[in-house]
Image 1 (cartoon, rainbow, N blue to C red):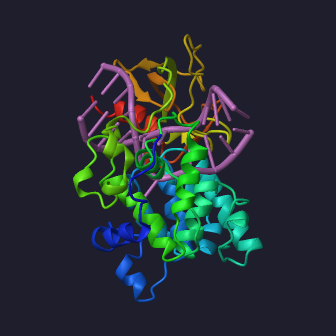
Image 2 (image 1 turned 30 degrees about the vertical axis):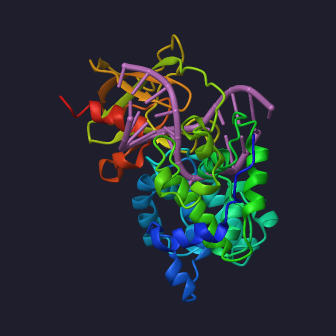
Length: 351
DNA sequence: AAATCGTGGGG
DNA sequence: TCCCCAAGATT
């Protein structure tokens, strides 16, 4: 690993950001910020939780819906758990939604509804880790904290031609990033590095010709930018099988089940079903005459593929389930379900 | 501390 | 079809 010819200049990146900052619903852009406008910490926090491992494009509509329905953190704190989980449905990583509610309630009851600016205090909040604590501190409060997300890791690995594979390289990349963080406009700077990573210093085909840090980039000098950052090889995903039972009562009600808070899809509504493994045993939630849908519901989670066999039944009013509870037709909205469960539902209507 | 935890888009 | 990737946190 060699040194860059000229040290990277944070103000050069800020000048680039002044011209190329992306517009986002939660963002106060550089010009508005220069005129004294400040972001709402609640909106910054909410956006940062939603953006964890999630694309900006996927987050936008959810952010608009949440802020329209719950304009302040105290509104969110007062929401019903089921309403928040339903509003989060489809966005994934559902522990974020459970922690979001916990955090809103802690902020409301223990912090007078006001977000702290100290990253050490922010770190104690549910769902707030090192990245998010630094992001809230820097972006919402303009304190010189260093954000290290996937963008920053990629930018730093190239700037310093760091070939140590992630995640082992994280500490040294964090130190590179910390050393560059300026005292002036730290909030804009944090967003600038991430915008650079998202639009110029991209994973594939980086637009080095447009990069304000090109002259400082060791990978650019060495021609290694395309192979950085290095990453440890990841295991292939196994395929698991399972059964889902979609039970309709004669009055139109559907049999649904709230999943336990721990584990996959924790806290979400779903169809009663079997375990998901190599050879699942059937686990019908009610006595009925079952029909098997020809097509399977296929879905890929973070660490496995799932092939779900969907069984349907129509049952009389008096029939009692061993699991789950019937939800009236008017109260049922398939968009309240996580995607895999919505796929199973869609199979019942696509024939 | 490696494993777990979703989803949709792009190459 | 398959893999990679996205403003990571938790246990």
